[in-house]
Length: 254
Length: 271
Image (cartoon, rainbow over all chains, first blue to last red; front, side):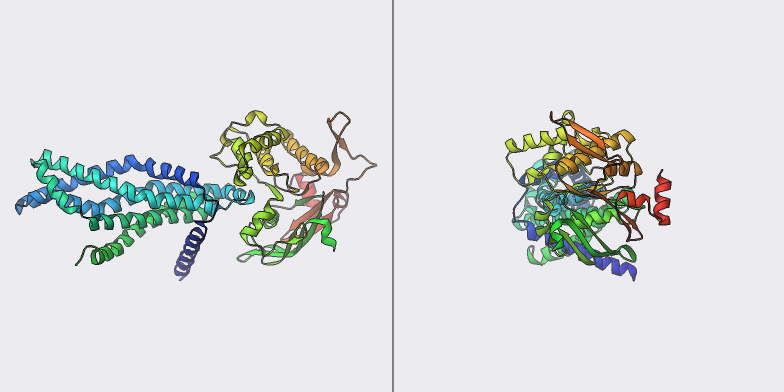
């Protein structure tokens, strides 16, 4: 029972945090410089791991499905298989899981240690609103950078699949690429961009919430960091299911 | 109205975190130019008083007045204006790790969108006041504990607030550095007429704050004088907290003469 009540209180507090972010988002001061800095740190800073994740995911996908496709004599569609899987599912989910691990934890740790060392109080005492100064820029940065990184992940993933298909299955690159092109429709891409936008928001809001609700000194910071990764990862996977259903019925037809 | 003479006033303020009562109908007032030294053991709500004064947390009941203005039910936006009048020195300095000493001190002015040409002289003046001009380009993690507190003081002084709150600024410092911090507080009290709440539990601080004062001689030099037997400082008063209640309020002479066993124990133990 206690657990349920605690859960409800957390949902309430997160909703309140979201409301405070939305209420202040267009009111000055806007902290544009801080937003751009966060886009650089959180977004561009994650580029390397996203490149590696995307490349190897695409490659292993082509590798694993190659034999099965060959049995049915449709090895030529492996490009489409890889690209569709990446755009619809693996690109958004893997990119955002990596972001939850790298960025969400970092946000929780940073805000958590600022809280326990009284820097958040100092910020308020010196006349700035920590929601606008710390939370909003991180949310804006992740909501914009997560889709951008997902697109990059999709691209290098398809490339990874191509290399695997050429080198291990002796496929012609033109066959792979023309088959992959079939997968790239506007609706597929749109669906594949909605997901990371939502996930980016989830990662940022959970990271900020966990950081700002840290209690119990430095041990508490560690706990918040772990919780932010766990909660945002689970939420990403759960929300992914709901979004997939919605996108399938609304954008991609029955 | 009596509150015209009070920079800060608490009226029957109560606050509890869950079942734990932190403050129980606490009332006191700080007159203009007065330093109120708040003492008490750990967890007796000393820091809570400062956080309430800044409006960082709200009381469960009672009223808090700053400059005669009732801030008890102020929103965060309204509080922003009140906070311009107040400078707060946090326990460990609470400097922003990601910003240099210069940027930390300049923070408040940057938030107010002041032009850089105005910011620099103010920052340098404040750093000169705490004698840390050389550290201007350092990052907070390169500073010693005492330097961090002094930068914290410099940061709190930007905008010349007439109220300064000190949250155990000398805790964990060596006696010499602690004295430097106390001297800064004296300078602000006696030369700038700043009203303040000074939270501490160190008797050495009390000694300095309650019996010394600073004057400027004809050449502009600062001279620290001891009150001696003839003088008695009236601008420094004490309150002692225990279990969320004010158990003593008055001057240092009265406190030393008090027969209250808790105060006796406190004064003897610290020595």
